[in-house]
Length: 117
Image 1 (tube, rainbow, N blue to C red):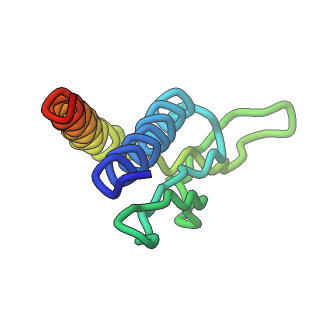
Image 2 (image 1 turned 180 degrees about the vertical axis):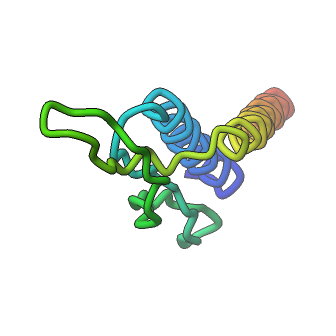
């Protein structure tokens, strides 16, 4: 595969994974004890990135809840909605940039083939 196309494809996959993690975190933000997922990007050879997902270990805030046995402290989700929404916007724009890069590479290859023909 050509380097520009490989780079754009790995970027699309990576930012798609990050957007998926953001949406999953947002969907579970009210689930007791839920630990958010974050996706880091690692360099790969040649000219690409690879998503690596991991659960965060930070505790969520405790909340006093009434149960049958009395009051009990339960750990809430450690998801910060403001952070997740901001990251989702960044990841969405990065996805669009990689998509445009792929489209441009395709157009360039088409032009080269037309010149050769």
